[in-house]
Length: 189
Image (cartoon, rainbow, N blue to C red; front, side, top):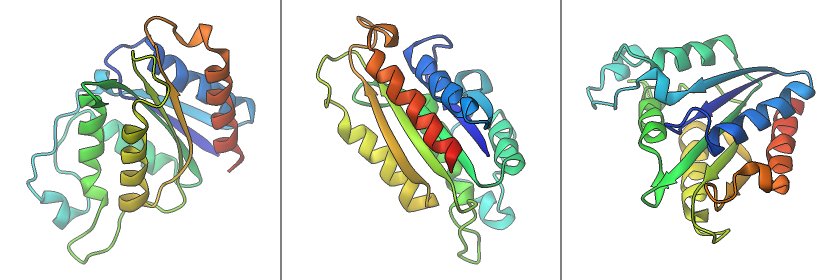
């Protein structure tokens, strides 16, 4: 079993990254191989809507997203995904949105077949600075629905960290435990 962490935060050592790493640690504790991708460092360009992928079943844009595509190829299911994003201006980060848009190449081929490998499961993590614990449940749900509808990725955990700046994950041990447990569940398949 392998678990791939996707961090959509521009901050390499922020709360979002910490929770993604915590989930990966939980997975590793169960014997899973883990890998971490920090989207900010991959310099992923947005989808251009060129439709080149409809002919090739691969994105034709050659940029940092190829590291993610390679990870998917290396780690065929069962593979767990830990997907983390801060909430900026009421929604997921631009980095995560670009990553998600670039999944279009997995949506359908010219023959109408779905291309994303079946059998994936995911844990979702969001962080934000509002003290309302359910303020961005809609963003979590939106992301879960996209993954489930377009790629049949089963979302097994949704974790929200409010007050991320004022009270980082270290002062919210229950959130750290949730992240570790989500990683463990992913590793167990």
